[in-house]
Image (cartoon, rainbow, N blue to C red; front, top):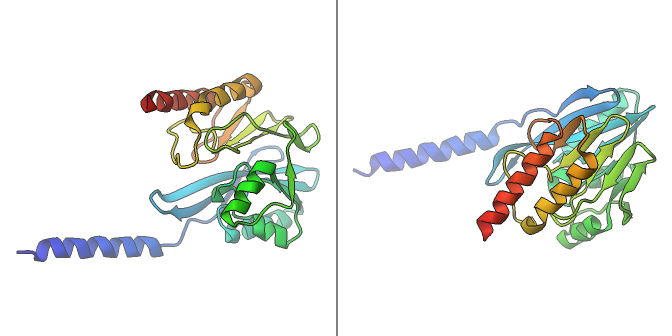
Length: 241
């Protein structure tokens, strides 16, 4: 009489094993504006399944700047190979917070002597985790990775205590990273929910004219993604009361 439940369990276990063994989707790279390329890297994340993480490659003349690194060293290497194949030179990277979907490629970039940048707080959090640290850190707010072209801004805590965003001044593109969560706040293990709405309001005030907003996960959109993020954060604050 217990054969059916046991069989169902075995089939479920087998399905999970097969799923885990399935190859991940290839790194995706597409042009979204002159000199700006969106990449999406994939990883199986425990508790969340297959997750696609966004980042940017910003090209100035022939110099390429990585906004966040892919979620694996393998895809980071593939991205640098792609940059080289286009005739560009990987000039530097900036990671927007200490989670692996933003920083996992730092060690590879360091090994290739490509300058890596994070805030001082992010480097401290990486050190506490025993992860590779960036070769350069900053405390200025805003910080210009590339003068008058790539601005890094800390709006306040939200998804994490250290989350920053990246503004491409010429293209009016905002890389919001994992701070921007229009469809739901997702992982909250390191979130500062009480501060998130006010931090989102600072982004709206500063970058409300953005033509394109790129979240860390999911589809790109316009500045309305910032207002939606604020609403999700307000809902979370209310739910905690």
